[in-house]
Length: 175
Image (cartoon, rainbow, N blue to C red; front, side, top):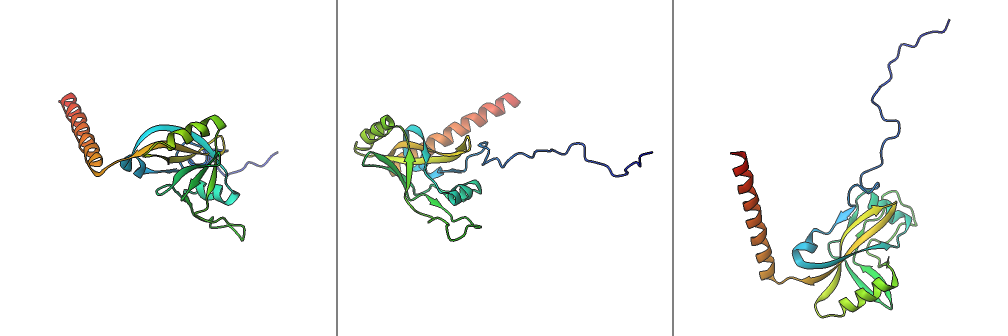
């Protein structure tokens, strides 16, 4: 006769816990919040980025910053400058430099289009977010025109007016 076990197993315990939301692509790794405030974002593109292993691990842990970053087309290639990716805390001698220039991957036709747009006066390439898609790191680049101080104030006024209108509609629906 077999001996009965007395321990209980947890019925609702997941056998395969899901990956981190950032690594699985459910949440952005980093977002450039200043981009919408300082620039008019005209057109957006998704591009790949060339990274080392420790950079990918740092991005997965949320240690990337796009605040001062910008894109540049040089010699028919696309580059990302001033993107800060902190060194991986468990990295060894092969850890990466935090502010190195990184190559962006895009089709030749897209690069030519971006080159034509950025040669216009006042337009630049600004990274707006970095995220995982299919296990690969992607960067969303926006063609942007800088805002003047009065543009920023006007945007803020419009945003406040829209918010107040939405709140008034919500209050009228409740009553």
